[in-house]
Image (cartoon, rainbow, N blue to C red; front, top):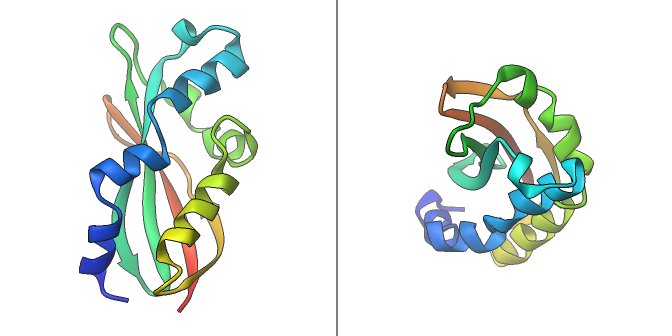
Length: 131
């Protein structure tokens, strides 16, 4: 599968539809009972294709007047992997449907939270392929 064709599939607009901005609000509403208590926004980015993997990341950026504290984001892979508002199983199914002409997605996993900067933490999302 050519990396260029995947970048054509996973455009910025498509990624926003796959993981809409409102999903962070739904997460904080379910977790804390108030969307305004949420410290960060969550978005999906596509980093490419490598060795039978699609490489995505969940990007966490602080909301105005808030900060990304490591103690708030390091436990998120375990929480995100099973939280219905984040719905990674549904996201996985949508990704599989989008690449079904090229490959079949077999499973996914989240990596550990990485602190890129004080304004950006990422959680790698790897989707494994059976090409």
